[in-house]
Each structure stands twice: as C-alpha cells, then as structure tokens.
Length: 386
Image 1 (cartoon, rainbow, N blue to C red):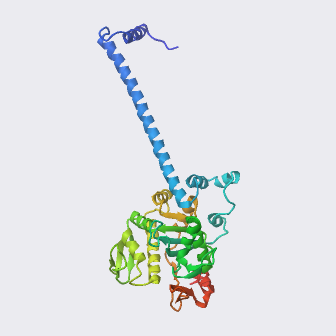
Image 2: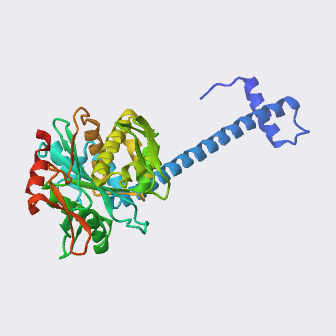
Image 3: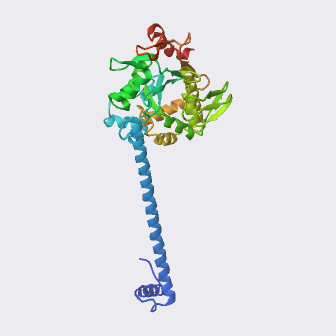
C-alpha cells in the first residue's frame, strides 16, 4: 500500500469532486488540473490510434505488394503461389521442409544438381519474339540463343541458332522453320507448350540438353534496357538501317554508343542492310552489355531488384524456371567471366556448317552441311575447347 499524506489525500478528494461539478462551480486551479490530465489521456489515445492506422496500412500495402508480386510470377512461371513456394525454398531449412511436405513432381532441379556437383554445364535457351498480341508473326521466335555456362570455371558461351533452319516440327508430320516451333506449341496448348516445342527442336539441332528456357517479347526487352539506364555498345564502323522499320531509321557512329530500349530493339532486329547472321552477332553483343550493366548496378546480386524488375514484366516474360531458381541462376551469371566469352553463329560460310536452299513451297531455308547435325553437335559440345 502506498502512503499518502493528509494533504495529498485531501487534494485527490478535491479533484474527484471537481470532476462531478459544473465548470463554474469548480475552482480555476483544480479545473485546470483535470483538463491537463484529460488532454494527456486524449493525446495518448490519439497517438495509439495513429500508430494502429499506420501499422494496418503497412500490413495492407505489404500484403498488396506480395499479392501483386505473386500474381506476376504466377504469370511468368506458370506456377501457382510461385512466390510463396520460392520463399520457403530460399529458407535455410528448406531441404528438410520439402522432405516433410509433399511437392509437385519428382524431378530434381538443375540448380540442385549443380549444388550437389552433379551438373557442370548449364544451358539456358533465350527466345525473343514480337509478342502474343502482335498480328504480324508475333509468335515467331526470331531470336534463339543458348547461354551455356561452365559452373566450376565461370566460362560462358553464346550460341545463336538461325531462324530459317528447316526442321521437323515436334509431335507432328509437319516441317517448318525453327522459329515456328513456339507458335506450333501455342496451337497445341499454351505458352508452356511453346517453350517446350522450342526447347525440343533446339536440343535436336545442337545436341545440348536445355535446362531452362525463357521467352522475352519486344516490350520486355525495351523496358529492361531502359530500367538499366541504357546499355553501351562499341562499333568498329558506323551502322545504319534506314528502310526496314515503320518506326523510323537507326544510324549509329563508330565507337562507343549508349543506346536506350527503343534504339537497342532496332539494333538487334535490323537485317535489311546486313543479314540474319550479322543480326545474331549484334544480339549477342547487346546481351553481354545488358549483363555487364546489370552487374555494375548490383542488380544480379540483389534478389529484391531482380524481383522488382520481373514483377513489372509479368505480361512480357515467360520461363519454366521457378523464382528460387531464377535467384540461383542470377548468382551464376554474377560469377561469369567476361574475359573470354565464346561465341558461335551458325551461317553459310565455309566454317558455318549450313547451306541455303528453298523448300518445296519456294521459301528460303537453311539446312546443315551433310544434311545431318553431327558437325553442329560437335561444335556445340566442344565450344569451350576453342
């Protein structure tokens, strides 16, 4: 029990009485005391209310961000609740966690094989297309490039597959150009089938196992480069393409050029003033520049930045890799060596392993020397031996 002096006890009784009086009956001093205490109590509850509103707003905005991100990555990966699954997979105890809970499918991820030392060479197929909503051949993959990485050494190779290569369309008796495979897959199912068909024909042509495939349309390509603040390319001689595009021409001087997304797209699409093989070389050049700029900005070492960029590209990027795998792949790209990137563009030169001809319908096509892919298989398998 707390001791109170007679004076303090009298003062407490006085204040209690004042609370029940009308304002004019209470003395000014005691009334002021009560008002001060009431104001303090009011401020306290006001602060609690403001804090509660702020806290609820924070939770709501965070939940909305997670919801938006999860929706975007569900689109990109074709997986339900992809963000939540990947967040669990990224946790330190994830391996034990997934041993306890059932997971979809029994296949071991290529990333897990790398971590277990079972896979030393990783092959990622990159597809560039105009876009699903483009009526002018929007589903034709005019860019087909393999990024091949040796995990232990950090060596990297870029292998471009020409779009006019004439192949057997998977799961049918039809023949067509290799850049039509994605569209055939879309007819048979959805974009996942499109990726699968493209992956199938590229494996047949190159002899390489394709571990992951990703498609990027024009809008994603431009936005990625603009997000990076443009990319730098070096030209040995001036480059121009004035007549191919409705959007206008492109003219770049020799030397260093910093180009934005729109210019970069014209640069990698241009072929009237050169050819498809030169275009493939320019595509490889821009891809390396994108990788270098992303490294300089620290994007590839920051999962949150990767998620932020891909979150804005939900409608324009598709991949069969899950979010946690994308993060691990970014770590591998971060370690890649730029000192000696191997490059292969198959063409119709003496060493290009292809020859040009025409189909029965009169279309321009490319076929492998000797009418088989043995030489191309060997070139792809031995590319790091150059």
